[in-house]
Image 1 (cartoon, rainbow, N blue to C red):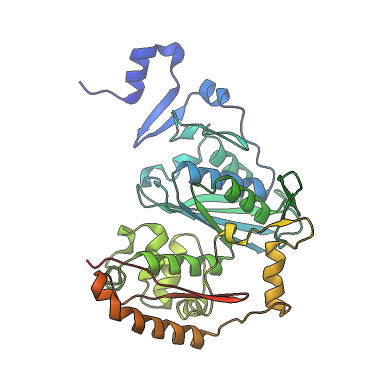
Image 2 (image 1 turned 135 degrees about the horizontal axis):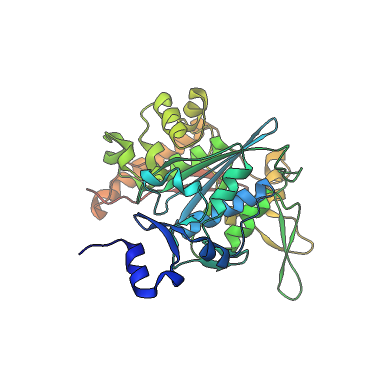
Length: 360
């Protein structure tokens, strides 16, 4: 005789110990009020930085190995889109996950550097404190894209959102973090804390779209990209690589909560907007008299350090030469020779990465 998860627990423990109010299936449950309170009181969302942190923790708990954070501001509105390659949310749960005490972590609440996570209150608290919060796209085992729009007049944030934090090593070996506790610092501190489990990227919507495009190109076989009939069958993080033209690129980006013009989409496809590196590659643990990683990046752009910024034509020239050289040995190793290398120029070096894709 089949029964629900709720019935099973009630039979075993009795109603006095029942932790679930409702079983939605697919591992999602609504906790009883007492159980949610046991996992601490309702979450406080007081600023944009709180939103970003809670969404990052959700992605981590969904076993994401790559998390992409797109941030933008227009007037007094802050837009935050977080895309990951975690276990995803079934379509039937897209609205319900923003209700109180709904969680997929009945027995896996997570104690981390910021407290206990898994009470089923984080997304609810975000929803009630913002203008809108929605699952832009997600499905089981396809990853997740969540978009949040907040009113900065009601939910503030640090005034300085452009400064990259400084990480300095003290004499005793401890790491001191300096700079405003803005979104960038929030993401950096999370990335450092969770460095063994996931890579985190943060940037503007166009930078994140370019990074997702490069990630898809590097991880999908050429045949899957060129002949994909329905990108919805692919993980969210790889879908942009299947775009055949700027219009389809912009449409796919919009479906995951990132709004781009076709002109911007064209610039990404043409390599004019570069993908960005993981946050940890920007973090430099420096002695007290050294400058921070974010400042070094600014020095490169201002021309005060050595290095070059390659133009789109030069990037394609290097890519074509690399493909030609690689194709001669690809057959010997039974891997795809028709790939798109990633070319990055950073300070005093140019890095060319060739994706290795087994032949189908």
